[in-house]
Image (cartoon, rainbow, N blue to C red):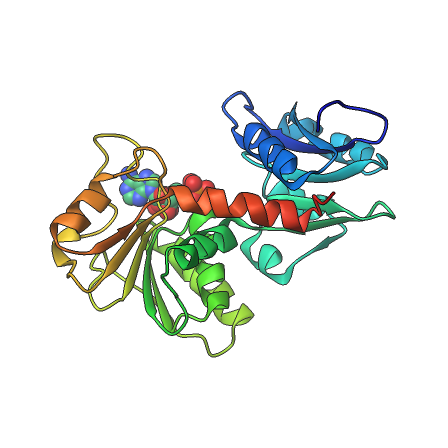
Length: 265
Ligand code: ATR
């Protein structure tokens, strides 16, 4: 896009706070790469005003879609006309497409972005056992995406056990027969080990799992992007594990967001 004209379609990211978001730069660059006559703008909206904003945006005929982030991912589910079964079970939506008739269709792509990042690095989750640390928003999305990708079994471990139980129950309902267990901080016996907690963002954070139990045959993956080598990844490298950083999850998700909201020339 060289200029915004009357033909330009509009996408938006909804967040509060918004100043830190990097999605506008990333998706505008992707649109230019794809030759899309479109622009993605930041919209700073508080939780109380989300519903009013979305009903207005729904009437906007040149709206391509919405990217939804903190703190609106949960509230957005009820504001969509249709959401995918996984997004409903996860209870969160981060990407919304506006159809020609104004219907809003929501999807949760955090987990799919993670799995796409693994695959891009040549790590195929299908048929492999997985251990997931965390049961919050990001962990929920990744758990469903790993189940969808066909891991042979999944162990979920979290400080607050009730959140694991809740997640395991929703997974079992969505994927009947899927082998999901609640685990301890010990990740041994799993081929892919994933940190989906927020531990690792801060320098003095404790490790999200017992890294002394890691073995060289394991792949250890992160969702934390900054720092690129978290304390967990450093410990995993030291123990001879293959590691996978947090960055690819976002990079791959941008493509999925663009595809889902039909960012096409
Ligand atoms: P996000 O949307 O980034 O996933 P979240 O939903 O708040 O954020 O989830 C944060 C995750 O990190 C949770 O699994 C949380 O554990 P609890 O469910 O017990 O809160 C985990 N986490 C954060 N700080 C932690 C800490 N100090 N020790 C252990 N787990 C922690």
